[in-house]
Structures are given as C-alpha cells and as structure tokens.
Image 1 (spheres, one colour):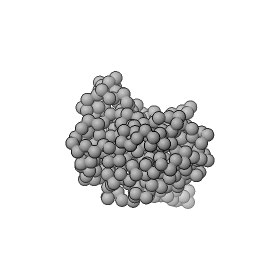
Image 2 (spheres, one colour):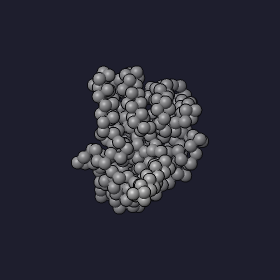
Image 3 (tube, one colour):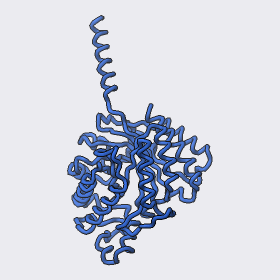
Image 4 (tube, one colour):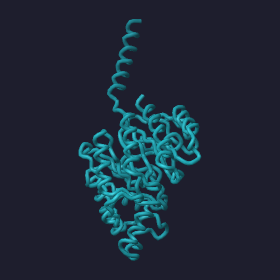
Length: 345
C-alpha cells in the first residue's frame, strides 16, 4: 500500500514538474490592415489591449490585393504626412516605439507569392510595363512569379530588407518574427518543388535580416514540408493538403489559428453587442490550443507533443471596410480580451 502511494506521488511529482517546466504558449493577434487601412492611433488601441491581456505580438497583414499599407521608397509610397492609404515612415517608427514600451512584438506580414496584386500594381506604376510583366505570373495577376524568376526574387528581397529595417525591435533581437505568407498559392499541387525553392530563398532573406520566418500551412505537401528550411515556423489555420499530425511528426514548430474558433471577420452585421457576446461565448466553449481545424471536423483534438508554440487570433477585414474606427474597435477589442483571458488561464 505504501509503495503504491509512493509510486503515485512520484508520478504526480514528475507530471507537475513537466507542467511547470513546459514553455508558455505564445498568444498573438493577426490583423488585416491591407483591406482596410488602420491609423497609428487605431493600432495603438489594439496594442494596449494586447498588453493588458498579457499577449505577445501584433502581426500586421499590410499587403494584399487591396493595398500595400506601408511607406516604401522602392514602391514610390513616400508621403511624409498622415494619409488614408498607408502608414508613413514616422508613423511606423512611432508604432514600433509604442509597442516596445509595452512589451508587444510587431510582426510584419508580407504575404508572397500570392496576395501580391497591390504591390505588383505599384511596381507597374513606378517602373514600367515590361518590368512588371517580367515578374508577375502569367496566369494570375495577384501572384508574383515563383518559378525560379531571379528578377522577382531580387525585388522581393529588397522589399523584405526595407520592411525589416522599418519594423526592427532590438529587444526582440534574434527571435522577432517575419511572416512571409505562402498561403493559397496556385499551382503548388503540381509545382511544389519550385514553390519550396522560392519559399526557402525568401525565408533565407528574412533570416539574413535578423528575423525568424513564419508561414501558413495550406500550400505545403509532405514532400515540400520535408524540403522546407528547418527555421520556418507554421501557422496552421485549416487542413488543406496536410493534417497537423504530419507537421508534428516532422517536429515543425506550430502556431494554431483554427479557422473556426480563432478567425473573425468584423462587419456591419455584427455591429450590435449581442453578436459579439455570442462570438465570445462560442470561443469560450470551443477554443482550445490543441483543437485544430480538419476538413471533416473543425474541432479535432490533437496531441501536439512539444511542437505547439502558440495560438493566434486572426481578424480579416474585407467585410468591415465601411465600419468606422470605433465600430471596428468595438468588435475587435472585446474578442481580443476574451481570447487572451482564455489563453492565459
């Protein structure tokens, strides 16, 4: 009897030690600022909520088909005064300093090779039609050519360098994140080798400028994942070609942004508080860091072992373009607060 009790106490002690030494999961917010430009003051309100809730980062998805929302000498966006199209250089630096003071990492999200229509159009305006045609895909105007196109990768490298300089946070030196997107890429079923060569090249540039690369999961095959640079972390939003278990088996660092429980699109339809309360209750009921979105089950429990590094709540704004800043914040901030409260407990 005493021996059995001792064994049980020993097992309990080991379990408690393992739980105590397990790294804390990272909690972040991914915010789509491309489809709807957001001011510095707006973003500061979001940073405040992240700080209060004990969150770790704000990822800015500033580049997509609808807009490239940053200052860029390369792309000819060089205004110095506040405007309604993009953040000017002084505003970006102000935002970084503000986030620094509140221990919130700002993650630049430059999504390539897909979701590139806005900056490719700026290339057409700034340079000429021939150069534009030399780097854009011949089957999708929103896709930069990823088929071993040296001109295209060189321009992407220069843009990454420009972005990396603007977003640099010395306090996160060595582990600041840079999202390279890699999602919803046409042709990757048949041209995975070319796709991976492009992604590996781009992730190498990101690392060269002092950042850790991160991408979405959905355009990767198992062969591609095996060939992917080992330093690239994965944000898993829903099953496409690979289940979470495949990433886990290859010991790939994962961040869960379940398409059902951790994605929200603010809209005029959700302008009343009842809709947000319903969403809060839904997340409380169904969100769990180890619940992933499968094709046949959006609430699949996964044994993530030690590869799960964190979760991220994503806000896409294509349905919220007509909302005022206050209306948009009234939807976003309570959801951030609820998510972080769950994540920290």
